[in-house]
Image (tube, rainbow, N blue to C red; front, side, top):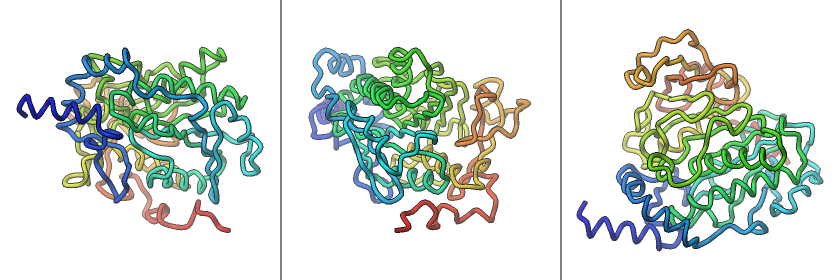
Amino acid sequence: MSIPVFILLMVLLIYSPGGSTLKAKADGNSSEDGINLKISDAVHAVCPFFGNAAKSHPQNPPILEQVYFQFQSACRSREYPIPETKKLLEIPEYDGNKTTVVFIPGWMALPTDRFVSALAKAYHCRGGYNFVVLNTNGFLSTGYYTSAFNTDKLGEFVAMGLRNMQIAPERIHLIGHSLGAHIAGLAGSHYQNLTGHKLERITGLDPARPCFVAPIIFPRFAADVAKFVDVIHSNPNDSGIKEPLGGVDFYPAGVDTIKPGCMGQPDNCSHLRSIYYYIETLYPGNEINFKGIQCHHFENLVAKNCSGSKTNVAMGIAASAENKGIFYVSVNGRPPYGTNAKPANDNTMSDKCGECSK
């Protein structure tokens, strides 16, 4: 890439509305989040300049009253701004005895995106959970550097919203994708600072790479942000971070940047796979569709030559804090993605389970 073209690309990144010049489409959606390989490398290369500029001259800082917790039941959704999140407890479908899952989408993503709806449907099918989505209301839809800078403040807002709801921390599970993964991790840190307690579980789905690996410009996801921290790396060294970040790190198909079934597909296919792998495990009977084998060293993972003593470690909803380390996971190129899937459950995700029945 020539210098003038490179500079033009960076200018478009910073100043184009919503950073749309970098937006890759997937599954016919208009806003599913992703950065293609060449652009993600370019974006990260100039993070020291543009990232620090975003810090010193914030362009679109998040406003507390304009960020929302959106409760999604099978039939409807209702949202309240962070200062009023306790009102969620008054919604008839909200059950305080259930674990509350807060999903945090990534850059340019919306609560109405297809993968969010798919995740909600899976949780409604499974039962036993309250499903909440963070509506960042445009504060994660600006140029990439501004959005990345906003992750820490948004994480603080999530922590405040959870504190306001007064939910027991052992009944909270944060799940974040891409930039949303960093927000989830930072929320865990802020929650501990606000309350003195750790959240029960935080799951990072392919945490975003640009500006969050050396040189690290912004605060990021870490292994100590909750009692149990698990990570699924589906687009390592591209849109997602390759290095281990959690108490347990799963690598479907190893550190291959492009996952099985994504060759020739939209650029964010592999980045989104982390979500769809997780969704698959939510459906009853699919909890152990993905089995990981422990890798003693990262070099073994790269070589796909792992021989650890832990050979049947579940990835997804059934992941356990007892299994620490890095794990190689075999995957299929199309659903069911888990190679341990039972034939009887192949069509689980396409049936009516979890849909509104009214």
